[in-house]
Amino acid sequence: MDDTSNAYVPGDDASVAPGDHSAMARPAQDPDTGRRAYRQALIDARVLFPSTVDGIYGRSGLFESIADGLNYAVSKLGADQDAEVMRFPPAMPRKDFEASEYLKGFPQLAGTVHCFCGGDREHHRLLARLERGEEWADQQQPTDVVLAPAACYPVYPVVASRGPMPREGLVVDVLTYCFRHEPSIDPARMQMFRQREYVRLGTAEQIVEFRQRWMERGTQLASLLGLPHEVDVANDPFFGRGGKIVADSQRELKLKFELLVPINDGAPPTACMSFNYHMDHFAHAWPLRTADGAPAHTGCVGFGIERLTLALLRHHGFKPANWPQRVRDVLGGI
Image (tube, rainbow, N blue to C red; front, side, top):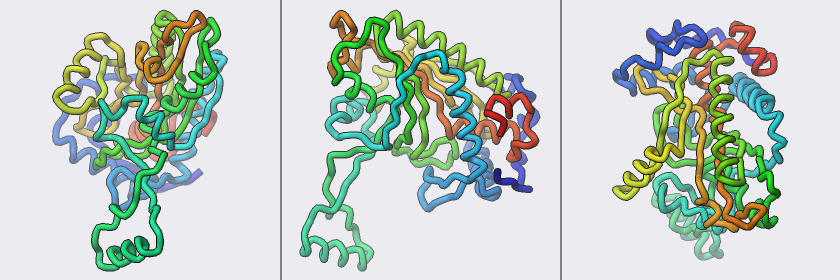
């Protein structure tokens, strides 16, 4: 494991004891200062490696060892789910992306994959523009691939292709890198990040019960990790004026909850887990059907691996060897 003599010296809430939630109530003051300070501390300690684009970072061995520990902890927590494991690359077919209707709600976050598809003439034009420092990206064309915005999206067309689900429904364990175009100085708001999810497919009753159980488990995990936290109703960042109406409806129906942890001094707490009920939305995008042929409901619990890693470093320091033994045990003994 990487070791470093550099240590982050945060503000007043650095002394929060494991399980102490008092940090949640502190008012946000000059949030960008706290975000910049924590990001610089991570870079100075070589925990994250910066690039010329905000939100794109390399990860150190220390960072990855903690991320591995979190995946171990989540796997232990879900060992009783009899989940089918699915692992996807951080990309998905464009036709499935279009079917999901993601562009209706979040066009500002979507990332497409473009490639050069021309011949010699077009190649010479591209190189000439590049040499002159001119725009060259318009010499590329969209492919049949887009970057996955959420870990669960590739799951639904796969399950739908199998026909009706068994009567008990299905649970899927999925992990992948996701992309969302939201460059930020906040180290907890990366453009490429990992989501670990358990996805539940079945009846409305099955999804509601599943989400409640995982809200309890997520809270338990945060407590075992010694992270101050709270769970609150939330909404996704829907785009535009119409998006505000959808977001208000999502909050009113309590379809989304988030587990929040303070990470940056002076800034609001950060969503590190989410607990979602999609109703039958994805059954209209793909033919997801229950055993009796009805449109299936879906839900998921998502763990933000990067954000939880940053939260652990923020509250316990940059040397896991000095962390509370209980926390290290939960993470598989890092």
